[in-house]
Image 1 (cartoon, rainbow, N blue to C red):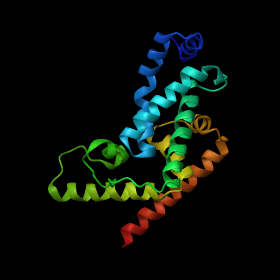
Image 2 (image 1 turned 135 degrees about the vertical axis):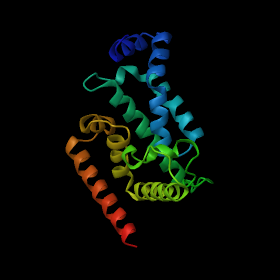
Image 3 (image 1 turned 180 degrees about the vertical axis):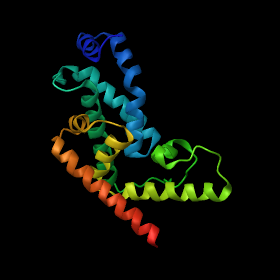
Length: 195
């Protein structure tokens, strides 16, 4: 299997097969990453196309100092954040809410350690659904830059270094934002439990 570096070198020479191989390797991960940011399947799919168009037209911009995957995630993240900013400027709001647990990819936002794999009785299933909604609301309330770091490290399972590379920020900033996000989530969860 060719390395990312080999494929990018071939893309720089306009090798369509290398591009297809890279898209096959990372297209699904990038789409999932984008859906988690923009919360819109159609917009995420459009952004995936834009991400890989940039790879095709600007492959020479990857300087090979960091992992290709981190560079790809940085492009995707920047495009997604630009998309969200443009939506805010136009005051567009999605018609769907994110409280539709059990449909699509929203289920996967709850950490695996919170899910009991055994069959649940109706009361337990209801409680789990409530916990999932609470978790999602708490994550959604995080400031955008903290939410993105939390998503990359805890949900995409990136290392702090790779998350820093993907976002184009220092590793110390990633640590700081992650600390803030965890503390905020813990306080939010505790406050909800005491109500």
